[in-house]
Figure: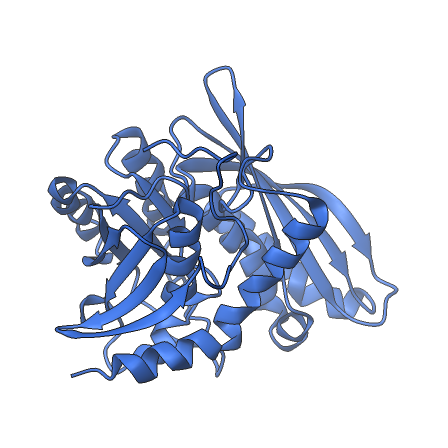
Length: 326
């Protein structure tokens, strides 16, 4: 039996999870809600056009990560944005970046990582901003894309099941909570795996979803619950994870390819079958509930992880002015 109370306490206090609360501060200062243009709280801004949505996603990286793993940071500038676009049901079209470094030598590995990821995933780098005369390496990137049908963070519905889909074919390359499922993978496989998300959106099988971000499964479930104005019960024993990996670490891990999706119970087998056809692990790991608490469960044991009504997480819960379509 898993000690869900200890697990919940550990995750709720971990910096990977609590770091997402910075979004609340920024949105408050800018006066943004999920009813603002682009709908903050989603993985990418979605701007309607004539027959779909233009998507814009931005990622910035911790200075320590860029300094310690410059190639990986450069790769992630492409890969993480791709995941955000895919999580919205979209396909990426182009990337721009902003790079600061102490000189060409420090910038070289970052740029090599970006260039190799750009070639692998088939998404061009089309411009950006560079300053190679600063006192430290810093990196951010923005990706554009397009969706014919959206997967959003706002449409999880009580009665839905929660599905986790994660590529377990990887490893932790260091001591951080970054799991690399892309190392050594063929380009066509990586591209085809991402294509699953827009295909699911266009088939109408998914109600809501998010990519599993730096907050891991725990933080991502909490973001999804708050944005949709609902609760989530997570069956922690059902979560797909690499053999031998500590559960607490896995639930706060950025898995490089991972998504939480909600759907009607009747549609879950079809969704999981699509991931299984590409050798990606997926499973029903919980359900969407009324209320505002994310709860960890193992059999009859239950422990609250976070109640976003009592303690806002992103500060982007729906309000009377933010109607959410059921």
